[in-house]
Image (cartoon, rainbow, N blue to C red; front, side, top):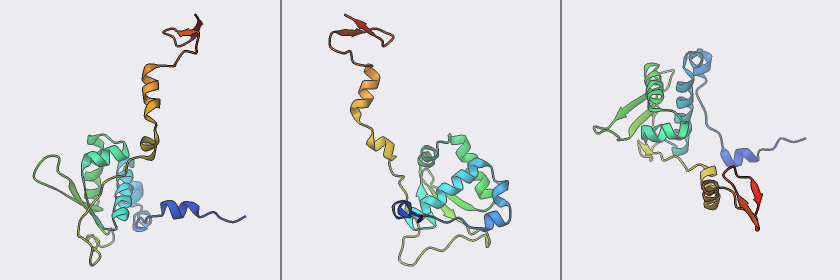
Length: 160
C-alpha cells in the first residue's frame, strides 16, 4: 500500500530548528510559548521572510489566547532569545517579530530581493467562510413547524 502525499501538495510543511529539541529548550518552554513559537514559524514560512509585521490581536484570535497569555508567551520567547519583538509608538500598532537563530543568537538573514519585513494577514478560517448564512438565522429563530403543527417554547411539535 502506497503512502498518499496529497496533503503535502495542499498544505505544505514548515521547519522548526532541531536545536530546540537537542538542548531540551522545548521542554523548558510553557505550552503557550510553544504554541506561539510554532505559529510564528508558520506565519514566517507563509510570507517567506524571517521577519513579519502582525498585531497582537490577530495572533490572539488565530491561537485562541487571551491578551495576558499572549503577552506572557511573547516575553518568554524573548527571554530565551528565540524572537525579537519591536512595537510602534502607538497602542494597537503591529509588532515586528524577528525570528532569532537559537544557535547563534542573531536574527535569520532575509533573502536578497525580498522586503526585510513582510505583512502577515491570517487567512479567514475555512469553517467560517463555508458556513451558510441561512443556518445562522435558523439557529436564532429556532426550528420551523411542519404544516398543520405549532412549535411550543420547548421546541417540541404539538398538533394544531
